[in-house]
Image (cartoon, rainbow, N blue to C red):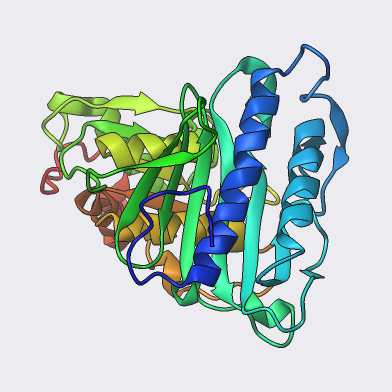
Length: 334
């Protein structure tokens, strides 16, 4: 069988590789369409809202329809998407179930910031919802495609992270052989600081100590990043290390975080763990959680393992010790 991906790991399930190749092929077409955005169509035009209440852009719908069309004829039994209210069933005898965010970061379409596609692949269950309402650790593969200066596919089949770069000359993806592991040492953290007043005390304290820098208990200076594109944040962390935080907060609708477990948090968490990082909801490991609905939300903290562990430590401190007034509390540094 011919795939758009070259240098596929020896022994990989050819049916699974076929599904990933279909996703990569559609992504290549989307990348070309994005590159022409504004010339003959408005990809950032509003088209309504999805089931979760998020605004849909034209490209959200375009991408969802393209992935559905490609995956409907092959090895996918069930398809769960951010843009679909319910699971869509394709082939009743197919072995896999695909959870997908067809176009992540769509609020950035008109600003020419990197956006992407996130996906996770499970063994298919007989009941559509049962394919996805399970621990993320049961995925057999996950990945994302980032549409940036390069179109890059980052994917894991459960044994490390593979990196493929789209060659615009051939239309195929070339595997980059360097191993993908998250650096331990980094002074970058990513969080939307405009929500500071809504955060819990442990998250505030953690960020306060990063802001205090070398004058605080961490003993070193940090840089804050925030792109508002999960694939872009993930790609930076896989490349340079650091930590990403999207915690729950006190606002209505944010009590359980904002990112979706099934097609955002779990697939990213699998990639991060395979790159020797850690992903939690602030306290507990993401991949061991079980979503109660298809569009269930979750807090998400991921990145270099020592950084993520530090956030858990802040949640374990007594309430008075997380106050910003205790700037010299002496937590071990990271």
